[in-house]
Image (cartoon, rainbow, N blue to C red; front, side):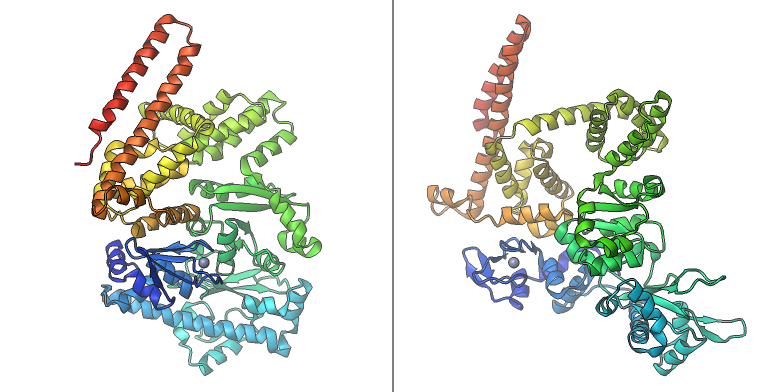
Length: 624
Ligand SMILES: [Zn+2]
C-alpha cells in the first residue's frame, strides 16, 4: 500500500509525539523537553528524552531515537506503513485509498492467513507425526535442534496425493486461493493434489515475519523431480524482493552493522543455531537489486562467503555489481576447500567461523591478490587483462571520489602504475554505458582532483575548533527555523564542511530547504539513511548544553527567536573567520617556500586582501 509523502507528513504533524509516547512511557517535563525511563533498555535514572518542539525522541543510554513513527515501529515491532496507518486511525486522518486497494488489502490478509494455517500444518507434521521420521532424520543429520525447527517454522509435507487437500477442506481454506498460492495443484481431469508432497518445508518470511511463501526440498534424490520447489509469485510474494532469514536476523544486522550473505536455507539456519545471527540467504534466485535495496536499510556492510574451490568472485560478479551500485561496502571471506557455511560451522564451531569473517578482505584486495597469486602481474600480457578485470567493478561505483581512492590503493598495494589503472577505468566506464560527454568528463576529473586535494587536506588538519564550529552550524540547521537555515546557506555552502559526515548532513538540510520542504528535525531525520548519522543528529539537537544559555544572560528578556538569530550571525561569522584564518596561514607557508620573488609578492597581496575581508565580515554578515 502506498501512502503519499504529504499524507505521512500530515499524520506526523497531527500526532504530537509527546501525546503518543505518553501512552507508553511516563514522561515529565524538564526544561524544554520531557524525560522518562527508556522503554527500550532497562534503567533507573531517565535518559529517554522527548522534544515537543522538534517532535523527536532520543535515548542517551541505548541511542534509540527518531520521530513518532520510529517510536511506534520500535515499540510495537511494526513496519513503517503500519505505524503510519495506526496513527492515521488514532488521529482521524483519512488515508484516501481507492476501492481497488482496499479490496487488495483484505485479499492480502486472506492469503497471509492461508499461509499461516498451512505453515502450522507442515510444522506440526514434522514435529509430531510418526510418519515424519525420515524428515526428522534429515535435520538430525544436520544437527538441527527441535527448537531451531520451531523458530524457523520448518515442516514436512507427507508423501501423499491429497493429505493437504483434505486438511484444507476441513479447515475451510479457500481452495482457489490455495491453488493460486501454489499449495495445491490441479490435474487435467480436475483432480486436486498436494503440491509439496514428500518434501521438507522452509517457510519464507517477509521482513515483518509473515509467511509469504514456501520452499520444499526433496529428501531423497528422485529422477524427475527438482531438488527445490518454490511457491509461485503471488499478491504477497515477489521472489526478488525477499531475503531469506531477514525477519530473524534484522535486529542483529542492525546491531553489528554488518550482514553475512550466504547461499542456502540450511547455511543460514545452521549459522543462526550456532549463534551467528546477522545472516541472510539469497535462496532460489540470483541476488536482485530490490534485495540489495532491502538489505541496505539495515546495513551498508556485507560479507560474501566463498568456497575456496569455486571460481569465487567471477561467479558472484553480478551480485557484487549490484551491491556496489548501492554503495555497499563489500568484503569477501573464503572457506576452506570442500566446506560450505553449514558444514563448516558444524565441523569447526562458531569461533572459527567468526575468525574467518574477521579476516574478510575488501573485495578489490581479494581479487587483486587472487591475480597476484596466479602470477598475472609478472607477465605483461596478462597484467593488462587482470587490470581490465580489476577496474570493471570499480567503474560501477557511483561515488567518484571513492573510485579514485580505490584506484590509488590498488596501485599502491600491488605496485601498479596509477595512470594505467585510470586509463582502463575510463574505458570501463565508457563501455559500462555511462553516457558522459567529453566536456563533462574533463570537468568531472577536475572536480575529482579538487575533491581529492580537499580530502587529503582534510585528513591532515581539521582542528577541534573547526569541528566544534561545524557542529554549532549543524545545530542551527536542525533547529527547524526556515529563516535561520536560509541565512546560514546564504553564507556557507554544504561542501565547505570539512568533516564528511557534517557535509552530508548539511547537504540534506540544503536539499530540503531548496525544495521548500519541511526543515524540522522530525522530517529531516527520515532522509538520513545512516543510523549513526541519525543518532549523531539526535544527540546534536538534544545536546545537553544549550548554546543559547549565555546569550540569554547577555540579552535578558529577548525572545528565543531573536536570540537564535544573534547566535546564527555570530556562529556564521566565526565560521567564516576560521576559513579566512586558515587560508592566511596556508599562504604564509607558501610564502616561506616560494622561490620566485613575484610569487611571494602575490601571496602577500592575497593575504592583505584576506585580512581586509575578515574585518568586513562584521558589516557584511547580518540576518536582516
Ligand atoms: Zn534507552
